[in-house]
Length: 341
Image (cartoon, rainbow, N blue to C red; front, side, top):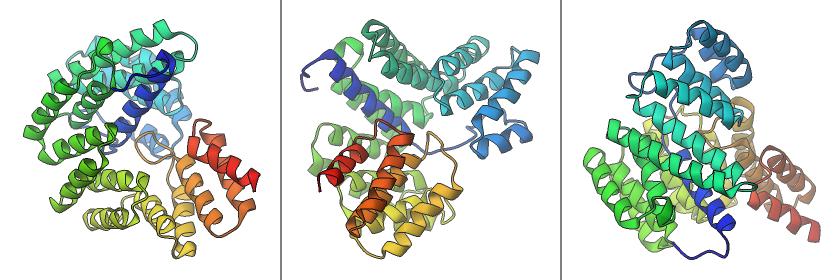
C-alpha cells in the first residue's frame, strides 16, 4: 500500500475501500440456514422501514433475549439506519448465543468497520482497535464457513488494503483469493480483479472483469459488480454489456433500473429513458446497504441534466445526493463546478 501523508487519511481510504468491497456482494435478505423474519417484520424490512422493524424486534428480543436470530435481524435493522453502536451490541449478543454462525461474525465485522470509520475522525486509538476487531470477525466468519462468499470477499478486501500492523498483507490476500477460487471460481476472478483495481493496475483489472463476463456467470451479482467497475472507469460499452448479461439472468432484479439509467447517461443517449430508469429506482426501491445508494442515483440524474445543459436541475440532484450522503465526493465536486460556471 502506498505510504500516505497521515494516519487519518490512510485510515479513511482503507475504510472506504473495505466498504466498497462489502457492498459489491450479492444482496440477499435470507442467508442459508438463517431463521426467517416473522412476516409482519419482513414486510417492514423489505419496505425500507427499518426503524419500525427495529421497534417490533426490540419487543421480541425482550421476550426472547437468547434468540440469536432475532438479535441478528435487529442488528441488520440498526445497520441500515446507521446506528452502528446498537448494531454492534445486537450482533455481539447474537454471537454470544450462537458463536458458530458465520453470517453473524461477518456482519459484526462490517459494523466494527463502520464504527471505526466514525471513530477515525475523533479517536484514532479506538478506530485502530475496531479495525483489529473487524479483521478478527472476518477471519472467524471464513474459518466457520469457507463457502460464505460475502465473508471471503470482506476478508480479502481487508487483507488487500489494510496496513500490515492491522492485518493487511497482499500475499495473504492472494492466498485467500486462491482459496476462494477453489470454492467459487467466478468470485475468485472478481476478487482478483478488485485487487488489481485497488493497486491501480487497471489494464489487468479490466481484463479480469471481461473474463468474468466471458465465463457467463449464473449469479446476477457478478455481472453487476463488473458493471460497477466499468461505470467507475466511464466505460459505457462494457457497462452495457454487463447489464445486458445481468438482465438475461433475472430481468426483474430491482437494481437493473439503476444500472440501465447509468449506462445511458454514460453513453449520452436516450435521456428520457435514462431519467425514467433512475426515477423508477428512486421511487420503487427502498434504501439498503447492499444495493446502489439513492445518493448515487441522484448523482447520475445530476450528470444527466448537466449533459443536457440544464444546470439548475443538475444542481438540484447533486444537492439531493449530498443531503443523503454528505461524503459523496463526486456530487460535491460537480456542484462546485456548476457554481463556477
